[in-house]
Image (cartoon, one colour):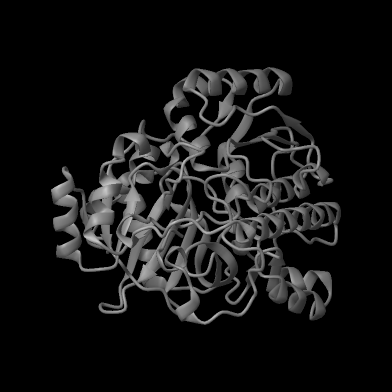
Length: 454
């Protein structure tokens, strides 16, 4: 059994407004069960499932979306003053991770942080520089082109072949309230040119990437924690059995599947970068070469990080707390076949888990649900209330749109179909459907489900 230093609190920072972010609840439970005082700075409403957790000590007002670095620093200073003790600070989203990376020197006086090189988090999160990082470390990566003119965008499409995946290099800068999305499946040169012309509005460069089709067994992820010596501890490699949206979103059902070659490549990448802290990497297998191609490097915990809670009770969040408080990290105790299910995105799989659950001690080693926990039931109940309201609102909105008179048809080569970032209920990145387990044929999937945003 791990023994964390319970004198040292933890502060979880999340700037985005997703009320269904199960990763935040997972971190609250993981640290709280170990006796750590857990504080959360996130845009949680009074009905938030995370607020219902018995393991949450206190919530604090977060920085507003789009907050400047000085604003984020001011919020974190206020929290530190209230907590009144040095705390382990863990970002739960990209915006928080990049802000902490830039503010590291300023924050190190009051928070315990991995000794990360300045700007490194932003470098790996930027999808344009990630291609360069992969090339330097010898990590497979889809062919990626960065056009500098609209004409070059059209030429890149012709070179890569249709369809092409278009991404904004810094998706966290995409403004809210627009029809821009972080990832788009492009089906014509005109679409690529139209997107390129909106680069200034998007806030970062457009990149065009070879499309890797999804399919059974092709989507993988690797989580881990790089300790103060650079050694990768905790985490593991997992296979994504179901995602939300299908083929293009977060892990709805995942399985711990050791893959030594993939793990070795990740350790080489971490060593080449000199990276420190928690990471979450997304891969897709190239059906032609059979290689695991790196698609995304997230410098923070993935929402499904609890999949890799091993036989020694170690996960990446606990690993950071142990490392920052100079406590030893135990050897890995891998649990191959352990599964993780997110109930609201894959309810049928969750029902199967609940119906086949055995003794608590055995079930904990075999599987974990994102929301339901025998020792902390209130968050699951709150989530279902909130989720039913969300689904009802989406369905009513869809019915209202269907009832409106149809407008004039829009040309296909100027209609950009967006990938919804899974799990965000309203505004940019909202979920694309209300019933994730509804049966659909592959041919019925939309372009946004076919493009990979992981």
